[in-house]
Image 1 (cartoon, one colour):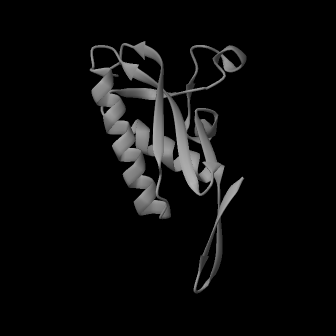
Image 2 (cartoon, helix red, strand yellow):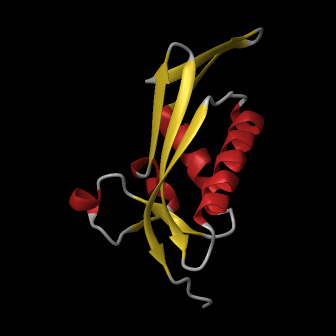
Length: 121
């Protein structure tokens, strides 16, 4: 599915992959995030941290009745407060999607797929 926006200059189509890439990019910039994880851990590999080009595997965009809901699967850093990280990711993703694509997001659901020790290298 895609979102179609009509402006005075024409029509713009935004695909779910674009929304997932912008959302994933916003999420990994938050403190305490090691990376994005795949929503299909058994199929894609349990320990896989997704690269930027594969963010759509770890972000699910759902659209119903002009409402957009995003499910994000992330891996957090050991020793951080998970509830604070989740709140920061939700705020950052909503803000970035609004400013970048002009989309109002109704909900950002966070699923923690793992906790890892972050390497300082």
